[in-house]
Image (cartoon, rainbow, N blue to C red; front, side, top):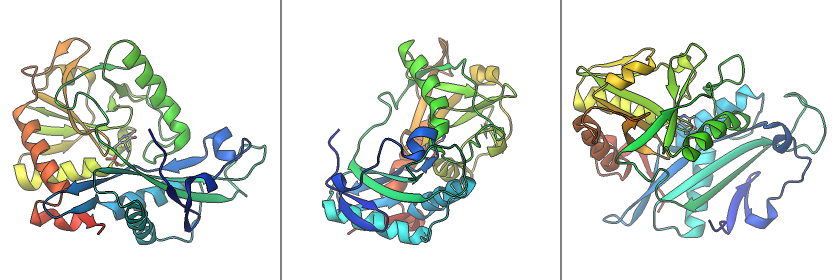
Length: 306
Ligand code: PMP
């Protein structure tokens, strides 16, 4: 993957090579960083890149930073403005992925969260699919347990906690699966390595509440809204058992990266018909239209770059 020409770093747009970190950087040694993942979608009719819900993503970034006691002189709107500028500087006219990273930049020895100096960078790159099999993934329930609120809070996007995701994702992929589902410390379904999860069973959508050790996902919120307001079908936030997934009619991941990815097999058990379900397909089509700015009702979620 080629690196971008420029990045936003500590308040300015600079050459990628000029935003450097040293070996002793606190965040590199102790995982004391938080990050985000935002997509921009190219709309060919309007010749426009629409960034999807940037203020909501930056609110979550600043919330995640707050968990690590980081303070910044930026409001979420400032970070959105910097992101639009960064996309313009590269003249991207395609789908893009934006990666903000807030990290403790001190080059010192000593694990802690206080008396440290936060830094903030944003990079934007062209981007396509995150999961190859968005139309039907075969996944496994991981033997690695999802971290919990009293370990590293999963509601925030804290860099160090992604070692937990990486263990689970690598073991799943090396065993031949596309992705994994992680259970929380209560043994309930939490989420994937980098995606929230929904099931559809007996006419009702269900997703675990945030208190089940899942990230406060922005895409999760978008789908909750689309299920209620567009599909007008019932939706519950409640704990889910592993075997409920086996009996579900439809199961799918949602997230900025995976967008909506259908899960058609879990540990060699066929989910529903074994193909992407009817509701999943409806939601997926709706989502792609919303994020590209094609649905007037949801247009305010899309921020145009040009
Ligand atoms: N859960 C985890 C663990 C993630 O890393 C992500 C990706 N950010 C998600 C869920 C989905 O979150 P969002 O919809 O905000 O991208």
